[in-house]
Image 1: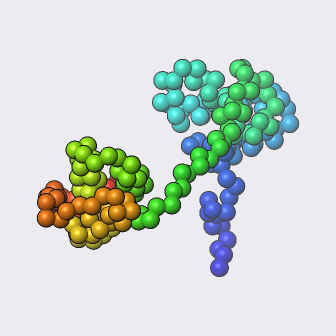
Image 2 (image 1 turned 30 degrees about the vertical axis):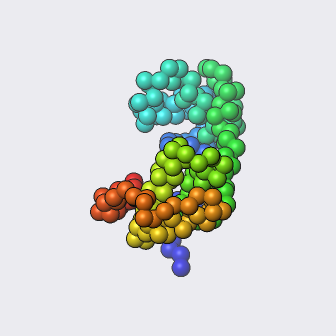
Image 3 (image 1 turned 90 degrees about the horizontal axis):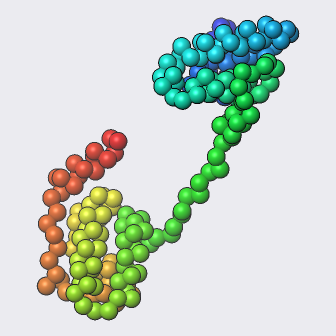
Length: 200
């Protein structure tokens, strides 16, 4: 169903610099279409003045006038034929979109433990028995227990952690449940922290 007179942004052309709003973009379109270069020059100056009033904070930046003219060139898609008071060739670099950063996708057996835990478990497999390996085992075991609660949405399970460490280290690391003491986990504090992170 359509209604006469209703015009939604989703049906309009995409703005090159949305921070200036559609009115400025329409003014620039009008300026580009003017036949006289003198008229275009005067119109462009008026648009620059309007842009400066819309963004007074830009005056705190060095060479802010040049930046406004760069932005005008970008909004016009470099089609505005006027005598620019400064060099706007560098504006093309501003308009270019950076290449997307590839996400380092890693396949890990259990997602709630995270890649760092599995790198640590792999490191443990190559360590010689001794106090250093025992301490790292203690640290990673307690981290895995916290991860189960925080990201695995399950109750802390000491036996599960011991079993997972044995399994993911191919039996190299064997924790004696009668001797190993896990840190006490305050579930209320841990769940409160989880809620705070979700709100962010």
